[in-house]
Amino acid sequence: MGAELISPYLVTIVIAWFGAHVIKYIVGHVKGDRYGFRTHLFTSGGMPSSHSTTVMALATFIGLKDGINSSIFSIAALFALIVMYDAMKVRRSSGEQGIAIQQLIKEQKSKIKLPRAAQGHTPVEVAIGAVLGAVIGAVVFLSTI
Image (cartoon, rainbow, N blue to C red; front, side, top):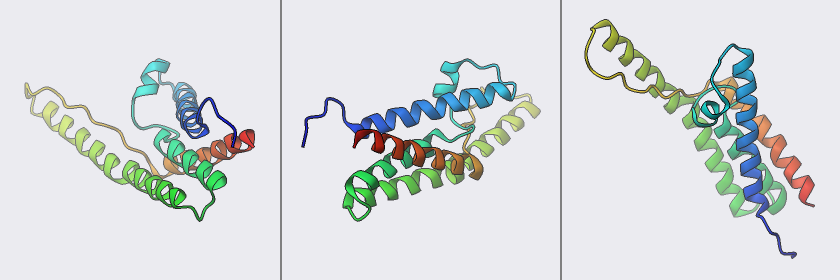
């Protein structure tokens, strides 16, 4: 086993996260969003889901490197499923509730400070992120063998 300067597992995570945010920035720009790249790096929601991309890239890399029968792959797969479910269901629902609360505050002309409404993901955003992550995980794996 050769000494690696940088963990390929961490490289997979960084490439997936950064790659998803670059694509998210491009998609937002094409749709007419005029937010800067930094804003796209640190906001939730949008196409593709960077959460899904990152966890699927890691799970794919682990599955290819350590085997799909390994205990660490099982943990990574479960982690990926939980994160993607949360992005689609829990965070999306929470964001919709936040938007409804903001509307009520505005309609009532209340002096209450508007809360932030975190945006979750649609099933399509999660699916595209998962596919992108699987591709990135495979590419990083192939580049390390």
